[in-house]
Length: 134
Image 1 (cartoon, one colour):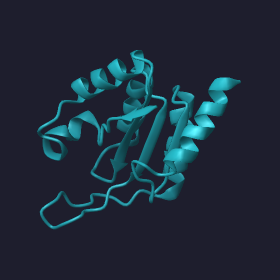
Image 2 (tube, rainbow, N blue to C red):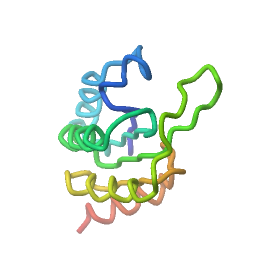
Image 3 (cartoon, one colour):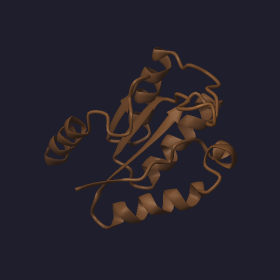
């Protein structure tokens, strides 16, 4: 089984992007899920004004809290009532995020402008499961 709980964005942006949530509590939830034997997945959207260093720190936090599967995609403003897009992230940056996420201990990273939380979920799980058997 895979249990997902999305971090959504970096801690600095929680007050504007996720005012009802708490970054550390979300990390604690992910760690609890992982410690109870579930494959744990989280995801973020970029383009809200975060820095590359903040995304890398978030990926390290996720890995240290037991996250195995990680998704990162481009934030797109769904309605005018939602936060505006601060930046359209270049595809090369998404490739860099994938490399850095794997380097910090995440077992599988889906990273690209069109990636969403469940992007290639079955394929990601199958790849991860095969590496766990080896």
